[in-house]
Amino acid sequence: MFANLFSRKPSNESSEITARQAMAAVMVRIAKSDDDYAVAECERIDAVLSVLYNLTTSEATSLRVQAEALEADAPDTVRFTRAIKDAVPYDDRFDVVRALWQVVLADGERDHEEDALMRLLASLLGVNDRDSAIARQQA
Image (spheres, helix red, strand yellow):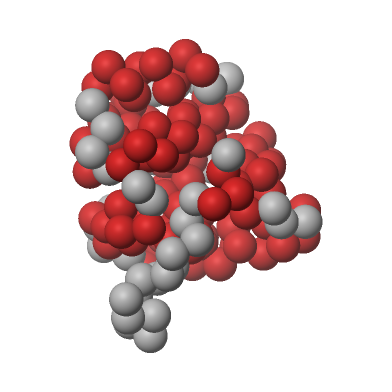
């Protein structure tokens, strides 16, 4: 189901990040939001990226490392969510939110920073709180 997500490219590739890069960067940002970027979260990001994009483990790790640099340089999250929204049809954004919840829950803990960022991300992606809660339960 995830295979076709994020297949469209932004209209101006030279100045915009791809939806794939944006998704990886958002996962890194949510994992770092509690000031504890745990190994379990990195591993979950790699696993989700592998499934989303049919990547090998090393390709997923490489994408995550690239995303870590993008995330560190980005002043806000809107740039990432805009790239995702441009590439992912509305009906498939629920799966995006579920993937993000998988990263949040990877370390076995939820904290206020992660919850707050997830509320923001879901809203920016056009997914309501109820659907985000369902996505969390499925994750």
